[in-house]
Length: 74
Image (cartoon, rainbow, N blue to C red; front, side, top):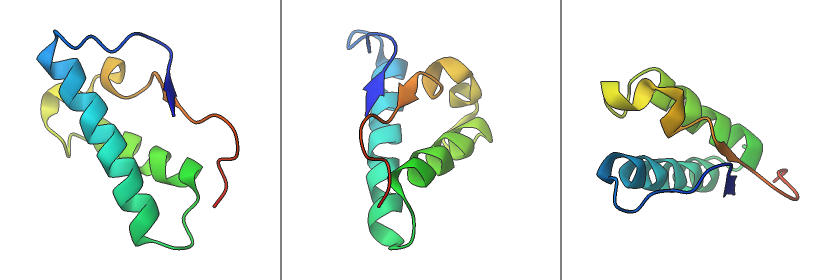
């Protein structure tokens, strides 16, 4: 997983969203055997967009810059 921007450790909200996205990705991927990594990150990003992680994290700056590199299949 990569990010198009630097995750600013001094900015609490960006650090928290990075953690939520990373943990959510691997929880989703690990809990559902048929889910690909690409589907797992998309699910977490949709959850963040819908406000499941708090209204602040609906903004794309918290979830949109993340991407998968390499084999995103199972």
